[in-house]
Image 1 (tube, helix red, strand yellow):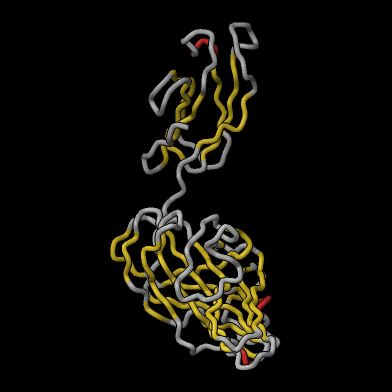
Image 2 (cartoon, rainbow, N blue to C red):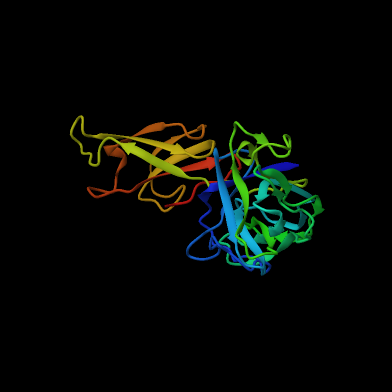
Length: 310
């Protein structure tokens, strides 16, 4: 099982079409105005935000309050998220609003442009928000079983949460949820009668999807000279780089187009991720004459994959 928290403070940068059930989209998801937010696990972002919708109409609406996007997944055919269960603190300002929890969980392409299908959709009007000054944990969604979908490499899970509102008067009522998480708070629903500002909303999948590893990145952070020569004291350049993953081997090349290409000006073995590595480029190693040389560092990670040419 994996408990995922909602990060309402940071955008995913991915604009995703909203599910067809939503008749109101006050935050503008899927448009130039609003990309999806982040769905993270098991860490938390330390920020809790209030998302509200105010209704003065007796019309019935499905109101999208939040859209949350996972990191990219690895390819997995006929995959199910298993049993799904979630809680979000919610309230309605008056019982006549009749606000009920709605959840849609779907699979989209890495850039969000293609919707592969829906794992789960809860639209039954069975869990009305608490009509109280306090925010009580509401099921988003209640325990349900995921459908099976074919995950393509890079696809993402999207969770959309909102409310069905059926205001029976023309009086102004508000439905609200607290989204986000903070390390000092309790996870819903471990403390049931507690204000939403003190509870962490989450969603849980009994079958944990496999996330794609971050691409291997090598960054040259500094060098002490931009020009070297045969002159003593000016004939070497010290270069410092870092890798975002552990390496089992690395090499630095001048004027190459990838690992193994170009003039070898530095090499080494095991490197720990996010630590400085220093090597020296010597003038005598640059044998193609007086010119501007481009230095690249390439690393092989623990899976045996070399970083790409940039």
